[in-house]
Length: 185
Image (cartoon, rainbow, N blue to C red; front, side, top):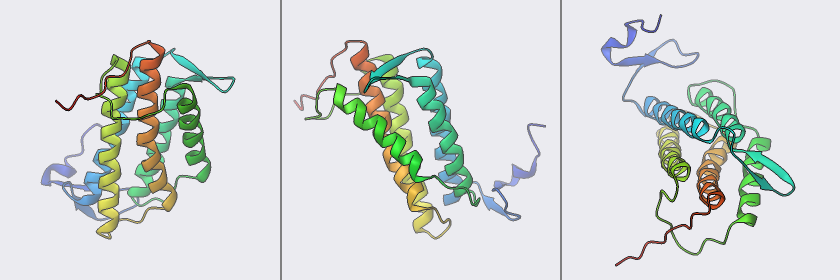
């Protein structure tokens, strides 16, 4: 059944917790922001299905990278909800590897870029901003003492926005579209 009616009073229950919390609580906000990010990653994965790029003698598939991130975000959500699951250092290193290798292919960043150079890039740009919001919400819930999350989880969330920025840039690069710099006029 897709509905239980238990949340009709504005409360919800998290993983392994017997008490109900407000849907507007810091924990619910963090979980919701992570869910929004993961859902938009689904759009990015669907848009980039079958597309790939080469780094260090290795072909990287956009959809495979995104699916792995989506799986990792479920680990983050479980931890935020009170599970003993946590992101490992290996997952952080993998994200760093991909970002580092993409940066070797692209021109160095010397300025901000206007989002949306390509359709795929625009989806990654929006997802990056959602990931940043999710990171802020998780940190807020942690700072309020509502949740405990590992240092690795915070590192992963911080690296995620870098990964999404790199994927936006490489998507535009593959299509031969030059990034537009703001003119500040």
